[in-house]
Length: 276
Length: 300
Image (cartoon, rainbow over all chains, first blue to last red; front, side, top):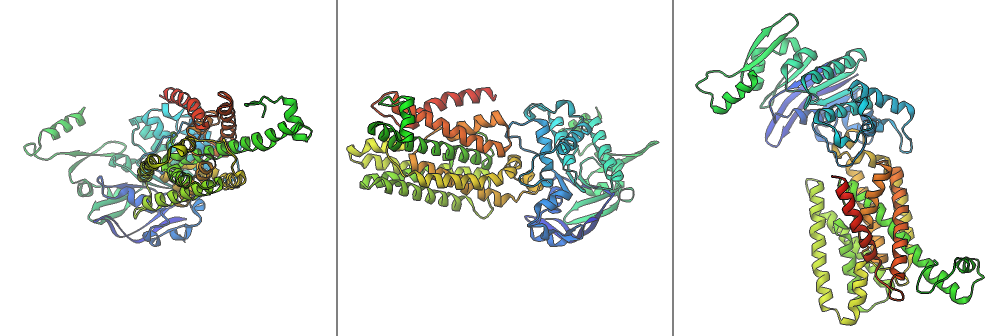
């Protein structure tokens, strides 16, 4: 069971995201995708379940070519869940209702949500610490609560493949850790696959066993976290210097600006805020 | 059935149905009031379902069936035929053809190379609608004075004369039957194209289905009774607040509520100033505007 990418070449306009990318996202693996803004991380993530693009021929899901899911979108949605970077909240609706739409791929046209479906949604709300808010209107939620609700919807969908576009956005530090622990737990214990776009290399280092690095200009690297997250590679990804600090549990990578003379006012401001 | 320029008692109405009434009441009830009530119901139901669909398509709980210019195309065709002095049957079928033409034009212009976006569809519709409005104004300016009255009635939504209602019921039933199986997908579609797509909805196909069904229903309503305003906006919005976003309930409930609202509005339209009749569109607007303003205030 895997999502297999074979010789994928992807472009956004004239910029190259990746050239000849081959990688296999297997069950039990938790992948992080790292790269600068606009390098094509989300485009790549969406590509993994886009049955209609010409590139879909380079991808297979559970040994079936992606384009063959074209007329069976629902069966693809049963096994792959996508957490979007942003959501629309146009219609008033309760938190529980919002989580329940994750059951859509598992239900036929005329089927109504069963007690079991509701139980699954409530479990997901409990796991994301939203159960007490289940009857609240989604419009009254805070940014972080909305983000946890988005995740609860994907958990309710209960797919084999979790495609997560910046799941820790808007979350406070404790929630970031709780959510990543929850995901990593789900992935290792239940033998699922996680593929996550994230901007925090340290969280990726702690929770993901594999990483996919986008360097820009179509260059990439994929493999074990321990081997690939290094000061050199991070510099190549983010185009800034990193310092590594070790403690009893883990290593921490801290970015820093080289040569104080070069840095302008705004950079100084930034580093001041970082140090707070 | 009971209220109007001639008061008929409940008893007499019942007798007319069973065929035992006086010839006068029998004619009034069976040939004037019953078809009119049926037409009113069909109009309200069609506009309300179209309103629900349009709200999902444009992902805005405040969208209405006329927002994409369907009624403009229908009105222009109807007015032109009135100007030529043709029979009612031509007005109805002409309005229907005008609506279809308008739908087709919006579809072609909005569905460009990059596919659809909500804003592009909305802009195309609004621009088309104002284009139609300009030509309608022109027709009103050049129309002879004796025809203006009828034209204005038509524009404001009017059920006062005899119209072929069987076509309207065919469209209503077809629209309803086509919409219900999509309802589950509509529940997901309100979350946006990307979310719906990732949950297994074929978004481009569903969008086309919603567009054509809602346009067809609007065309049916407009050609039957002209531009009855606010029903397609207020009813779906109000019913959504009451029953939530489960479209398998929302759609039948909206159809029923919209139908009943227009029947009541039309009863008022033909009785408040009796024997003078006023366009039903005025009544629905007079009910709709304050109700809408109230809902808008409450949602903030």
